[in-house]
View 1 (cartoon, rainbow, N blue to C red):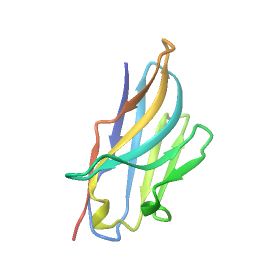
View 2: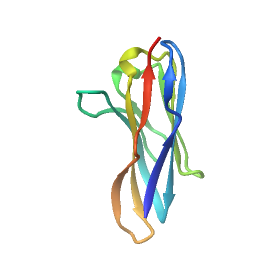
View 3: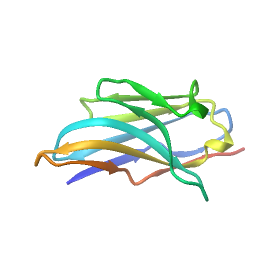
Length: 120
């Protein structure tokens, strides 16, 4: 089975920084696009940033210049460095990855979510 395990969420003051990590584990043959999404209370889940296998990135306009997505293919891990955090960044953050398993099946997998709260 494949799992995505997230870490790094927490409480931070406005203007502060956090770094999220999401590690893939299990019977994995290949990992393609990876990304971070978030869902605030009462709102739909939205894309934050994505990164391809060869490190092309895409960001939601509201986080451009503040957040940086990166990945370490040897560690099967995607990161989200968040600087200049604002209260409106408060949400549960989820990672997502397109993975082909050792049994040659491909699916999108989601992490369990990690809470990010920006408040003074």
